[in-house]
Length: 251
Image 1 (cartoon, helix red, strand yellow):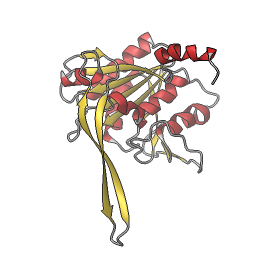
Image 2 (cartoon, rainbow, N blue to C red):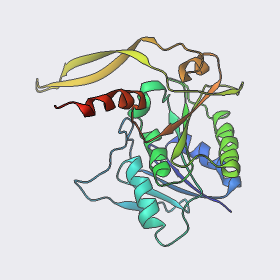
Image 3 (cartoon, rainbow, N blue to C red):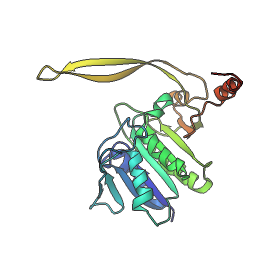
Image 4 (cartoon, rainbow, N blue to C red):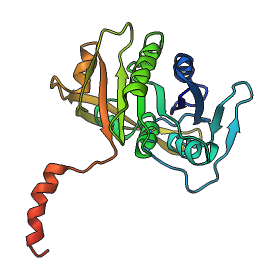
């Protein structure tokens, strides 16, 4: 039986995590190591300045809550909880409440959990449900399980993860895409607490987006699942080739 390691960034109590695990259980042995509280937008942060605690869930065998980030969860699972044991066959992160499309993948704790698996050489997937209000995983969770089964059978290129964004409702099809670009307008809202001290909310609003046919935004707009292969290597290779010419100059 393959070992499936599952995490998320919405916390171990999230309904998307429970729906995902229910669908993954027929595929193998499922181990859940997830944050004890929500860590949306934490990216690939790792906890270095305070101790980490692992709490085994009494009501669920193989479930562990970590007082840390999704990256912490995967690090602790691979190098402590499974120390001296076979590594997972696959890492699955999600299902996230909301989209992880385009430039936003660099903020995503959901994607980061899968990325930590990928950089450790384990095929990894990150799943997100593209919605802002209603979060019904009836169709998204079975699709996530089917794609997980396919990756278990066929594998992925080493150090590659699949970032999967699923529109709400019945699955109409899927498309392999690249990450698009969204033009964002950042809004800072100042408020005051009861003692008159200011505090701030950071928010963004879309002000246009990449509408090329091969980007993730377009696939979602057409009602399709967007599947984007990602890697940790952020090197801009075209810029690297251009900048190589500087090596002949004195700086």
